[in-house]
Image 1 (cartoon, each protein chain N blue to C red):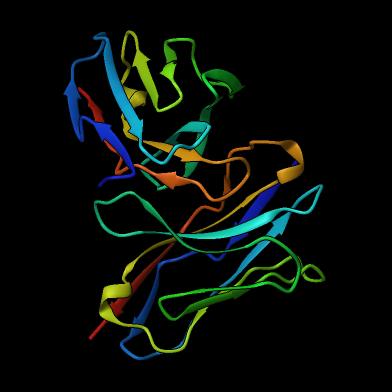
Image 2 (cartoon, rainbow over the protein chains, first blue to last red; image 1 turned 90 degrees about the horizontal axis):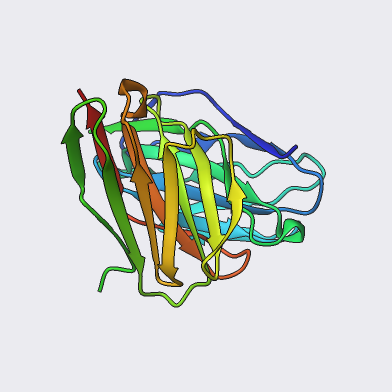
Length: 114
Length: 111
């Protein structure tokens, strides 16, 4: 079955540090890949997405590239801010299975300190 | 305007009670979902509805019964609540296989 594995947290960084959160996936088909962010006490927000190999999703300074050869979708940001502190979820859906729900990784908590 | 809304935001109740959570989306999407997030933040699908029809029903106790009166609404009714039902429940919607949009969540606490 489909699955997503992301790096264990928590991750603690100083402001302006470089961020990488690793995400790898296992899928039977050609999934669409997503990063969602959950700020404290809030619901999940779509951060970025990519629907085919070599696509790069980007938003708010975050980027992730769909790498089919390594089955990865790592999240990066060049300079994090305190306001980026949140839990980040990597997820996939398999469009060949119709309206499928998302399969989530376990989430990575990021804390950015000033 | 809020795209996906849920009520209530917080729900505290005693074991054995029956409760409902409501969800509405104004995005015109054809598919709606219920997810459960446990205390370790792990998210898991519970149900999925497409055009008011149940298409996914994961292994959840039959005390949980979703109902979709129309495409824009998906409610979750829970009978005989147990301690282990305490979690945050998220409603989401999507158009086809594209990105899902989540509601703010309902934090259920069973005492």
